[in-house]
Length: 323
Ligand code: FO1
Image (tube, rainbow, N blue to C red; front, side):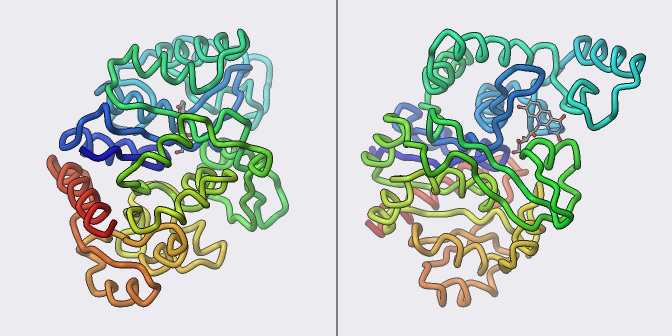
């Protein structure tokens, strides 16, 4: 059986991995995950994409939001907000508690932060957390070095990713996205090995700009994908000109990229030989192939049972028959 590496952001990647693990031995799967969304919030290191994937594959994610734990209580955050309200702390201030951390989710951030302060790498801690939740696949950050996604709004404000995504509800026009620290980052040994040894590489249906680019842009990763372009398959996160969740289409438009599967094909053409698009975009298949990318049309909206597994099979077949 083929070793599979999946480049991951958050919710879309988690759903794809869930389908993949239904049809492929988890011991042969490595999720190589974005850390650009990571933030230090209330002094704790939060890794949203790693946690969303871990909680989803553990069957413990909050299904309404796609992040955090199901059945959460919020006593700690209520206490934070009580202090902030009584003290006139501004709504934009982190102490006001705009980033919601459930009581059990807090345990993950407390543990991760303590382990990092004790000298463990993010890769080590991620492995400890994933194994505790009983996950069979390998889940690794693309790098153990600090890479942080920042956006500059058209008004010139500099926002960390979580300030943009959560505090501003990604409802501000973006002029530039950058990935602080990425030029000095190195792929983690586990991430590099996963790409080296993969018979199939999948770029999950995550946001190309703020989730996949901070993975591909780590020095050495893009080069590894270019070498393995023939067995690299991307799944479009854009369906019918819109993102299923989050600001991907809006960001592409703001960065003057075409917010369609053709724009996604152009974005990934250098690293992926194949793009899987949803049936809603079947009529754009020819335009995708005009970008030099093979186009496969298949259901990609993983809201119904079985779609994720079928999509995973389609990606594995496309990766291995092209190789
Ligand atoms: N997203 C929100 O929209 N609001 C939140 O309050 C929020 C809290 C949060 C806490 C932990 C965590 O792991 C994720 C959280 N997210 C929240 C989601 C997160 O901002 C996004 O999942 C990613 O960063 C984007 O993929």
